[in-house]
Image 1 (cartoon, rainbow over the protein chains, first blue to last red):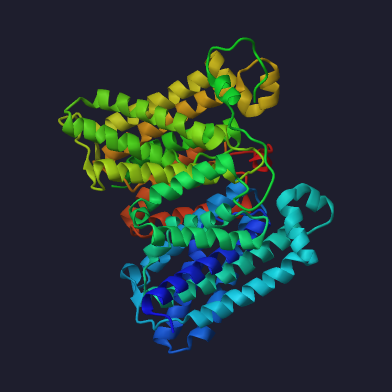
Image 2: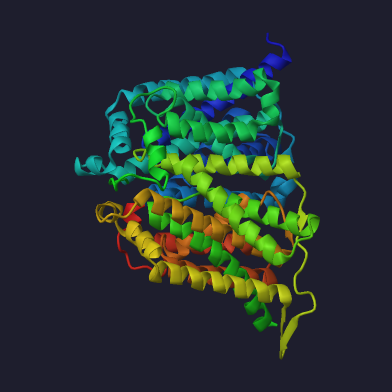
Length: 291
Length: 292
């Protein structure tokens, strides 16, 4: 058996991987959600209420929380995915905020001070969940549906012109993604043993995005790489714990300029050149068409 | 009482209008959102508050400093999150500007601490009473400065060559470039102006609540997003009207229902708008929705 510390690290790592894989599914269709922590909190609260107040087993309540998150995901997806990426960003941001406000004022679930009384989770259960998701993704990426995800990500208009039901496929991907995130939330609630609405705010959403963006959206194992790197870095380097917000912020900025496709993945033009910098300065020889 | 609440709501709305203008300018210039503008407003407000309370300088100077700081921060954001980020990746500027926002918030908490800062009131003795209505000096300043800045912006956009260039780039950057407009510099100018507006909004909001906190950046962004969705993305006049509306609605909700419902009602309203009229309440569908 592992000692308690290793087990805690393994569980944290596993939850991060599950979150990253869940997010990858919607990112694979090119639809980025900015409020995935909301699905996490829906999953966490559903499962915790079921295990604490109704004495259900963790396995069943985990599945129910996945289902609840999927329904919420389908609803949000239906509103947002017909519109463009900016609207999706705005709607998912607002959705996460709404969930937080509602949970804050829900006294039955502990309100702002949080819900506790959960018993722990095991690495085995987590491993089974990750295994199921990886098998699903393995077959998904080799299926026709996986191809259609890729088509929508690369060129939505072309995909639509080829007769793909872009909205239906994206909403479905969004719901599946929300379901996996919900399950991850349920498991993480039974690891932290206390949940508050504030845990699932914008920083958590951004962290999930960073897992996937760092790894790259082309291959699902890129998301795993991102999750492992970003979870282990603060554990290996203690000083990062204190500066993690600055580090993550700078990581976003640097990544978007240097490798917007992620560590894993290929293909982009280089935009940061001295010539591009020089074009901004007022002293220019002749008017060249920039822009 | 109701009239007093309506006026308070309109006053709140004017500060929203400034930040919404600031977001809308960037949407117009690039069809992208700068998600770090809320944090830009926060930095300006914190610095302005510190200048006034620690260095004892007058409100006017602190306000000008806040404008300058907002402009610089927005210019830096442009360079970091937009200029050198590949246009192929639509989410890249969103993520990058969110990253800049994170960096700004943690830098501010690291440098000046995470305490709330007091904004001393200005024009202490002044107060206007019209029947039951009471307007104090701070509110007078907020109203007049916000109105002045909005009018100046309209004048700048419609009457000056640079303003015309901004509108041209917002309509069609390729065509504007072909006609000799230095597109990248116009976009930088747009960012700087939007930062100035964000800075003004930050300090004025601080003045109305008499306190600023380094953790309000994301909240400000969220409110501004609600306003510009309601008014129509990129629609400057629509944004101003929607800002006043949301200001009144929020104030009335706090006064007659409960403070917890304040954000909820706004989100609900925006949600309904998005389902029924995604292009916003005050826009004809001119294709902006398709572009951004």
